[in-house]
Each structure stands twice: as C-alpha cells, then as structure tokens.
Image (cartoon, rainbow, N blue to C red; front, side, top):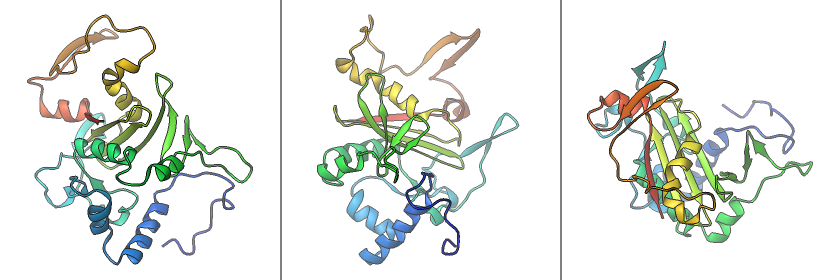
Length: 253
C-alpha cells in the first residue's frame, strides 16, 4: 500500500505526524522476532499488564462502549477492526495499566534509562531546527513540553473512532498519569491529565500553596460555571459519566 506513494517532502526536510511509520516498525519486529506483534508486546514489553488488542469489535463485555457525537448527541460507534494499525495504535488497556506502563518506562523496566533519555532528546531537521508540533517539541515517540510547574513532561495522546487517551510522564518526580475517554474528541486531554495529577505533586509546587486539602478521595461534586449549574459523581446517568464528562484517570509512581 505504501510502496509507490510519493514522499511528502525530501527526507528530514519537514515533520508530518504519521502512524504508518510505526505500522512498518511492527512488520520489522514481527520479522525479526519470529512471532506476532501482539505476542511480542505481551512477552517483551508489557508482561503482567492488561494491555492487548482492542476487542470492542467482537463483543468484549469489559470494554467501554465507544461513542461519537452526531448532531450534538452522543451515539454508539459502529464496531470496527483495529488490527490494521497495530504498532501505531489499536491496542486497549484500563487506565491503571497505562499509568503503570509509563512508570516502568521511567524506571528502566521497558528500555534502559540511557535509551529513555535518548528518546526524549529533541529531534532536529536537516537545517538544524527543532521538530515541533503545535506547542510541543518532538523526540523519538514522545512529545515534550513544560508543565504548570515548569517541570519537563513527556507525553503522547491517541485518538481513534470512539476513543481518546493520553499518557503523561514527569521524569524528574517519577510520576506517571493516564487518562481515557470513550468518545473520540476530548479536547486538550494531555492538559486535563496534567491538571488531574496536580494534587499528587503539591510538595513540588512552587506557587501559592492551597489553603484547603485537595479532596482527591471525593466521589462527587457540584458547582456553577458561566451561569450554568452542574454536578458530577454519584447517581449520575452512565452516559453522562462516561461520555459527557468523558475522562477516567489513574496515576502511578
């Protein structure tokens, strides 16, 4: 499918995000390892973690329902087979497994600390300029930026029909946080995950300290914003909890 497609630019002349490069790497891994990509990932990269192929297309009862928005309403997404993009996406996991995977990466259990450090080094084009995407700088497989406390964070987000995800790492404090949504477009999900992880980083925060303890164990809240009242938590309909609120969160050290 890719063999006869022309390049968008000369090599190393510009940056264009693409999952197909990782799909090609999947083929390389399978050829070198002599096993399927999913078996290799499970054996060598994520052993003991519930990270596997997306199963929503064949009735996995544990998987969240996937939604899309049509005419302002949330509607269930038609099931689909994600196997074509393994390597660049199409895997599924609970939020805890993703956060724990990030922790393993930072603690040298997936790649060596030297390799992880090299992955965070900024990529450069042939003219010497740093590769950037929106407000992010780009390394090898990771985007980097500065968090609200000016700490360097490494992160990546994913999006596909009926799903949005993000993994955010704070290498200096060894904090890993993940957020998942079962709707395709959840704006600024990396920033949302960063905000939700803030209570666990208060000891490192250099700004004005909060006057009240952050209720990290709260199960519900209510409030008002821009003249509109809202509430979230106990006794709310499933669709509101999982789609309109849209985010499940976990973190690990």
